Image 1: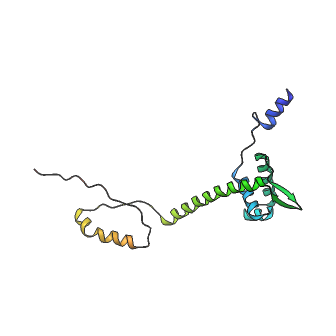
Image 2: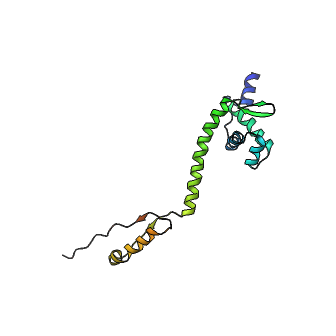
Image 3: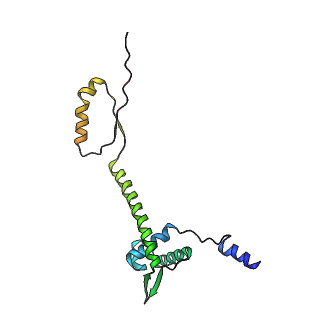
Length: 154
């Protein structure tokens, strides 16, 4: 009975480990990229103890040994190398998203709707649109409204 109570209180009802959070994964990635917890802390603008704590938490959550201590240096285990490959793939996707957001912010992409009389549409607008297409300004998608149905007088 006491064992069941301990298992529910300490490890949770199903013994499920807590999920990994972004900060832990970011700390793991920084250590793998830089090779030391001090350099990783500098990279993430945090402290070395917080990086060490994040590594301990990620190892505990994942129930994997990700690093071995060898003469005061962290050496990644084969599991850490495999995890790092998965983390890198996801971070590259995240960086691509960030680049897209920055590009959208810079370019001001939007929608340009043009409406004018048929006379202007046949005379002035083609030259205006050609000059817009030739400029270095961002080119929003052009959308013209459908032609209005003509009314016959018969």
